[in-house]
Image (tube, rainbow, N blue to C red; front, top):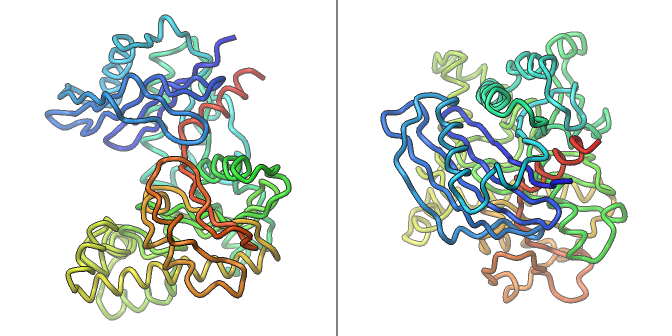
Length: 408
């Protein structure tokens, strides 16, 4: 049986894709088509990805082309033609499944599922909970099902991993009838990444994931913290939407809900303006004028006090959640950093965990300075709580889950 899966991650103006051989953990081809709907779209592709199960593929051999892609259907056609002309044509490798990233599955989807018309309809209904994400995800699903009608299509939901949250963790203290009527509860996100990273961390520690308590810090432009007990999510920082929790590139993270009514009364801001303020104008961008942590560091080193404060706020919030999840878990075997900032920013890792030595958490500064792309341990030998850096690979995780569903 073939074990090759095409993974599609569709945004409003882009499609990321990766062709994965799940059996050997190899990325056969990958890329992203950006600027869909603009006069000149751009396809960046690597037809010789070399990833494995411990980290994403390399980007050696990346090719960039300007293409015509007026809509998602045209964009997917460009991607399929690019794949066919690459080193691993779809007609030769065959496909076991197409795996689709879908951000919000609400409380309806606790597992990946084969996509049929009913599942499409449910994703559409759940768009009210993720209006920026589910509609483009769904557009990609519909286009791909038409383009590849004889291949199983599988939806893998970011929220599914967090369906193991206990009621005490997912319930907001909001009037219960209103909450139930409108689906207001904690759902959590980045679940696909956390699932992959939890298993990779267990391999690095040479332990079974079922025997570990982990605090996974997914730090990218979007950022979240998750408490994982025995491979199951028991608490997570993102909530009804991806806004809650850690400070992010452009999102506030945790904020007093009373700020909204205060700004409504005092500044006259409407609902859409408040939404834009919290999600797109705040976070690192709002504090330091830049949403890329590398630029924030540059400005801080140049003496910019706003950038210095932004870094401290960012790390303070991470430390806050690490402490909270130590309490939730009772004992942690490891703190795991992943995603763009988590994998690459030694300063953030060190400062986020500073002052936690009494709790068994410490960073070895020599190990922390290692800039390789593989999973590695950055805590001292004999530390009570290991500190790990584990590159995430959401595409591989989607491929693995899609193959499991298709094979069943």
